[in-house]
Length: 362
Image (cartoon, rainbow, N blue to C red):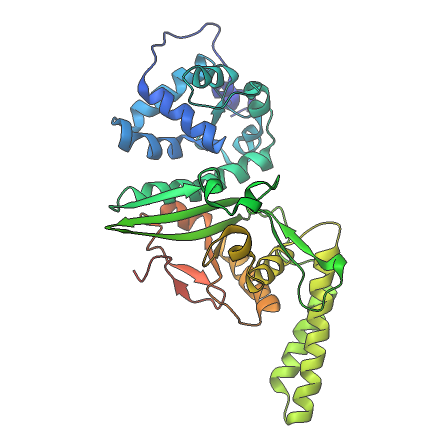
């Protein structure tokens, strides 16, 4: 099949198809305004339980909305159609849909060049946005099956932050300098997503807070292969050390090798996941989540493309934590998230590689 044949689904017809607006269409536009990009399956899962109908009907609406220029398909997805064959289309709002939402006071006033921005989005950005959306969609659809549970994202949580944090231009950044690091080693990380799971019971409200990091294999786990090899060798020597004197010497070597590796990843021109882990861990130890967000506790959810990358991340995390706070970071893969029916009971792997469910045991 030629590229031109594959891409016929991305072209508008010569004339607009007959179209009559439905409530479902506005619901689709609202979800796309919130998430920017969603694939057809994600849209079906979000819209159908509320609006009724079937997958086929929702997909028909998507096609009609696209052909009437209410939705766009980002050009960046054409690349993985060429590489991987047919898969679900990814959609975003057009300027026409943006104007429609604004006229109904369903979207804030502002720029309306949505068609150009969304259609021109690059492949890496589209993939990362869709995979981040997958996690958020799964949380949303799971919460609907639990009485009294709801999911709230960054825009909704902003009003609950301490007043001094609300006034910051970019309130969701985590900042921390690991103990013993120079000023240049200060870390600063902005999560891919921020959310809370809220449970409303009689006279009581319980919230659990999460930030998410979504790995699409565009960022290395660790930078500095030689430094990592030295740390691994030092860790082996520490494990095999006999006698107090040898143990103290081995520990000093481990501390020095760990310091050099973490500092390299913190000060390199290009970042790594090891740098992110370091920043989150030390921000957590310093109580950043309490002071800046008013959260009593925190968990960092990390999704990756495959099991091998997940296991590599868990290995690298040990360089940072040394086994401390194992439940601070929870790991899963994109496919595991997509296939699970209940994200609350889904088994993540914690920093020690042990299964953990975010709302209790399965």
